Image (cartoon, rainbow, N blue to C red; front, side, top):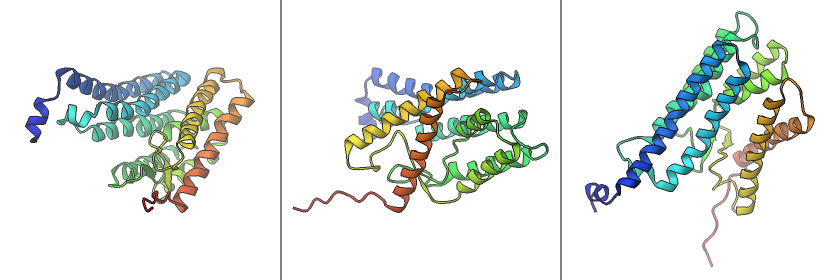
Length: 252
C-alpha cells in the first residue's frame, strides 16, 4: 500500500490528535520562554516551576506520540527534530541564562562556563546516536535545568559549582549510557523492575517538587529521596554501560 493510500485511510480525528501532540511538544518552548521572563524578574522559584513544567511536557509527549503513532498521523512533521529543538532550549539555554544572571558561578567565569555548556550540549544533541538503538542517552544528557536546581538548592561555593558544571560538560563526550526514564525496554527483561524504575522516577519528581515547595526550608526526607534517586540513576546507568542487556534467547 502506497503512502498516499495510507494517508487517505487516516481519519481526521487521528490527524487532529497527531497535530495536538506536536502542539503540546512545542508548548514546552513557550513554557521555557516564560521561565526566561521569570529569571529576568529575579523570580527564581517561579523559573524553576516553569522549568519543571517543561520537563513534565517532555516526559509525557513521547508516550502520547507512540500511542497515537504520530509519524503516520502527521508524516510531514519531524517530531524528533521538534523535540530536540524544544529540549535544547529548555534543558540548555534557559538554565544557562539562569547561570549568567545569578551568582552561582565565580565572577568573570560564568560566560566561559556557559559557553562550554552550550558547546557540549550542541555536540550531545546532534550526535547521530545521542539516543542509542537500545534507548539510552550516550554521554551526559544535558540535564542542565536539573543540575542548576540542585546548585541553587545547595548554595555551595561558586568555585565548586564551576567544577561540577565543567565536569558534567566533559561527560557529554564520554560514551556512558544514561537511562532514558521514559524508555526502559532495554533496562531489564523483568517488567516489574521496569515498572519499579518508572515509579521511583515519578517519586523523585514529586520529592524534588516538594523541595522547591518548602524552599528555603529543607525537608530531610525529601532530600534523602531526591538525592537517593540520583545515586540510583547514576549507578544503574554505569551498570548498563558496562553490562549491556543481553537479548532473550529464542532457542528451545
